[in-house]
Image (cartoon, rainbow, N blue to C red; front, side, top):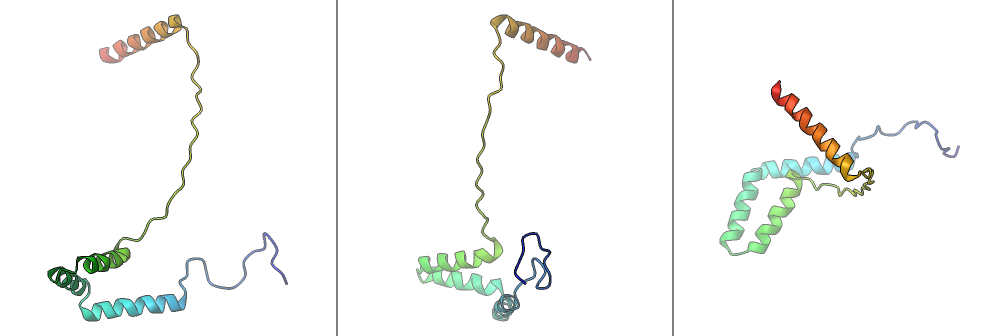
Length: 111
């Protein structure tokens, strides 16, 4: 039976369920890192690279590890349109509105 638009999903993984192989790989990598001493090991490696003057390699290692601590954020495209809905006021209307605002401020200060 071919897929029809609007057809309810039947079977398969639930949304957000990780792939078994991806989860296995992530678990293996985490276990290996923990066996080596965790992030203390990585920190020691970076410090050693710096001592040897291998700054580029140290930075590269740091950036690779940082991706796990600070995931990349997805770029968001935002476009906005501002509509100018100001009304055209005559100088007299502007003066009247300013006076009205001043009176309201006086009432507010009196309270």
